[in-house]
Every structure is written in structure tokens, then in C-alpha cells.
Length: 212
Image (cartoon, rainbow, N blue to C red; front, side, top):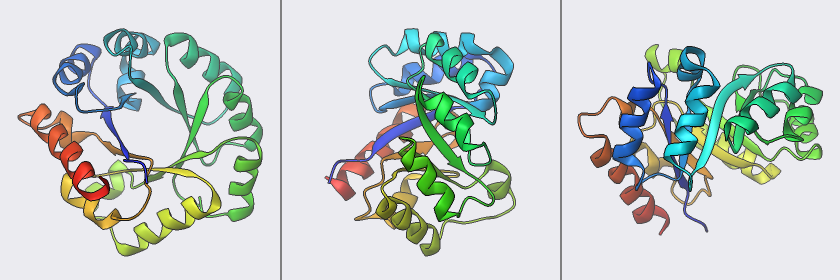
């Protein structure tokens, strides 16, 4: 079983703040995410700057594309992104058009559990999904559970590469022991830490301990 990758979600207030965090954690992470909030504030220039800072990392533009898949895909690819997010409510043609330009991750929100629809994603060459506990749901008190683990296992059994995000902390990783998670995504746990490097190293060490 391959080691899960580690992704930092840079949902920062501006690009300078994102770069400051990235400089501290880049030796511990595999994927650099230009977060939705950051892109809303600074646009594709945020993606370009993060790509310049991390030429050897995978860069994700978390634009949560819902329409205009071709234009979204082209814009993110030209800015230097390797991956783009689409929300599960987007139509299959939107996702497919984006996938023709750049690798798509489907973020799973409300109403995602439709096997026929998910099989359409696979049929169109879309193999990445993000199992997601939303920012607002976490603030409302939602916790990770064995049901979440079962959901992730079922998605993997269908043929998806599954990333996990939403209030992820190092101690959460143990819940997924033995499950071939593709990527663990951490945002505020790293960006809001007094020592982002130390926390990102905790994540990486825990991944090596559990899956190594």
C-alpha cells in the first residue's frame, strides 16, 4: 500500500500569508492547495505565485467549479495548477470538459451518494474524489466517525482515489488505518498553528507510522 500524500490547504487571507506558511511546511507536504478563500481574494495570481514557490509539488486550485468546465480548467492550468476541484452538483459535461484540460477532483457535499452518477464520473475518466466534512459542518460540531471510514472504503472499492478533508488533525489519521487514502488534506490545523512546520511534520510522521 502506498503512503497517503499530505496536502496543505492554504485558505489564507492573502497570497503573502499563504507563501509564509508554504515556506515553513514545503519539506513535509506533497500537494499545495490554493484554497477557495485565497482564490476569491487574489484570483489566479495566487495559483501562479504558489506554483513559482513550489515547482516540484502538485498544485491544486480549489475553485469548486460548478459550470464552464473548459474555461475553469484552462484558467487553472495556465496559472500552473495540476489539479482543479469541481463540486459534486456540477453536471457530468462540466466535469468532463474540465477533465480534458486538467485533472479533476470532485468534492463531495450534500447529496453526493448516487452510485449511478459516480459511475458516470469514472466513465468520463474522473478518478479523484474528496470526501469532505465542510467548514461550516465542523463549526456546527460534526465529528469524524466509523461511518465516514466506511464511506471512504466504499468509494475506493468503486475505483476512486479518495482524499479526506475537513477538520483533519494528526490524531484523526488512526481512524483510517489500513485504508488506502490517496491524500490527507489539512488547512487550519497547519495554517493556524503557532509552528506550522511542527504540525505538518506530525502529520507526515503519523502517516509513516500508520502506513509505512
